[in-house]
Image (cartoon, rainbow, N blue to C red; front, side, top):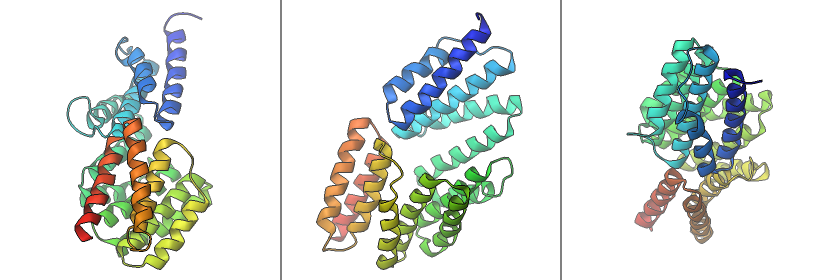
Length: 268
């Protein structure tokens, strides 16, 4: 096989490799594989070439998001916007809705918690998305509300999401949701329930990729800072998470950890 079809097969294979690299936070290799196509080839007029180009832009956005490059030139927002335009042209409604969800994530990461929560709320019932993505949107309503200080409201979204993830047999999402529930209980002043929820997350770790470790240790450290008896252990966990974030270039995670430490130092 030769010609465009052969190129498309190789392109699709490389995008699968990119997804694996992003899961391991191997950003340099992921970028190299993406540049092989987005930097060298112009997408063809046929739908398959455009679809692969849209997937490439989406993955480039994921890479930039994980690196904390959220806005501006060469940012996650720019890549997602370009990918959305491609998928709209193709009439790929599910892909467009997934990108709307990712743009809401960027809003939340940028501190626009209430607008993000409203967008998540709409997408949680959007039939363009599959059941898992709708449930993730529901969970993220809770995370955004928790960050906005509305922890009691957040819990009412997180708990049903946990039940739905169990019904969908999505163990990683289910475990992560317990992390979010623990932080919402902490914010609501219920350290006992926070501890119970987080123990579930610890007993069912979502994985051992650097990003997963950093998120778990950051949430754990944040929780431990709530009690003077465990605060030193919390600071050690945050220090380790910060070192891992620096090693892998996860700048948004590093900024979040620094914010937690600054808030703790102001209260100490």
